[in-house]
Length: 270
Image 1 (tube, rainbow, N blue to C red):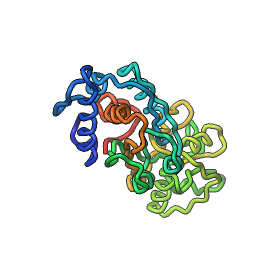
Image 2: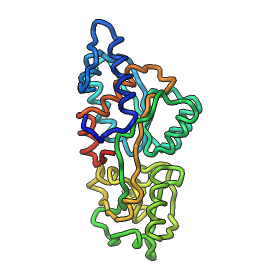
Image 3: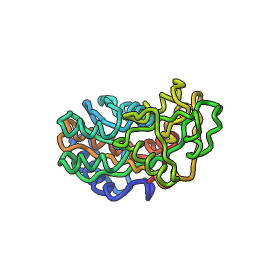
Image 4: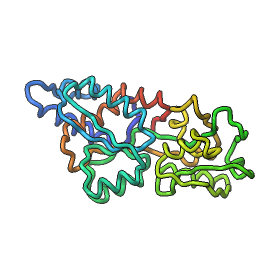
């Protein structure tokens, strides 16, 4: 793995994955320094089902990574639940049966780890940055945050408890723009859908979400987004039903193949 892609939690995760692979019996190979996590996961013969709760902005990239993981581990099955990170964190703390949690912000991950539901230290695996999503062709001529308060411009934001909403508030404050949205959505995909359906003229979403719908929307960059970059942490959960598969999935996300999918989607290395 390239230096700089993960943070402090990576070393602990690598140890956990190595132990899990070593304990799989005659079909496994022992982990060695510098080995590819993807190869380790495949050689371990990962089996069974696992459930991953992930931020809505990870929908396209994690769906592809899940397919790739299953191809590398044919006896495994990954089930995803995508949504607002705050909602997913609440469900985990209320007892939802989940193996891996990937949040769009450290704050929502902290509610899970503070409740004692994380297994080890979360690993930051990507960053994401906001853009202004507008209908294809940008009919209102929106070029920055100040244009969002012009007469007749309708804007959708994520709710403040959702990472994209918190980031939007930070960016708007940095730009000294006071905005009254016509709707507050519970995840970034819902905010984007308002633009695609023509219900609003603009929405503050992640650049990865705008990039995922190039035929319907354009993404307008703005300088204040640099002050509101979100880090995405991921962790295996304490009560994971299939901890070996969960550790292997996290390792696959961190592998070169996983990173390639995330980079193609527009995510940045942390």
